[in-house]
Image (cartoon, rainbow, N blue to C red; front, side):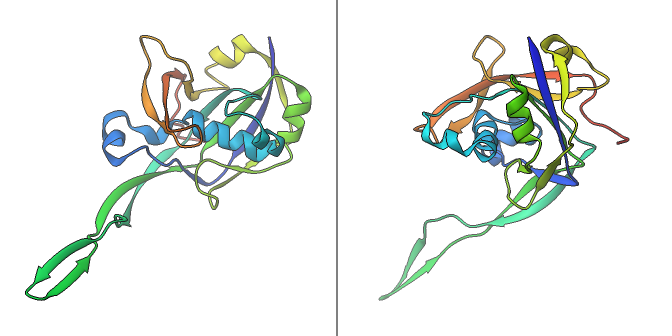
Length: 198
């Protein structure tokens, strides 16, 4: 099978973890979940917003970066804590500090089955999870075999979460776009996903 590959690059990119606990367990800030890839696909092809949830046009992806910059983020829960002091009531919300990683110099390859889809994608920017973390496309569209995309460690190194359930799969989150359905996948690592030089 022939694939048409579009390369996206940027200075930084953030991947929202499923939960802070999960990120300590599976280091989730280095791979894209089905909901993130589906969101990117709908940004590139807005006509898919009318379709039932699924991934239709992106046939594969590969993500690499030069490092993860750990940053702290202050959060508050939605709910309020109530304290009674005599006749008076006090309401408060506690603060928490989360460590979140931001990818430095991310490179993302998106694979499409048709050249037309790749051309449409190559004329638009994308973001991984936050709108301000923009990745820009390179104009050149690469035409390669599916086998080369899966195995060429020099050119297509990176992380790819393969969206299927088997004995190597693990739970990667709940898709709020699809009735909170559990999302599973297994991690394909090609070459050296963490680059020192770009």
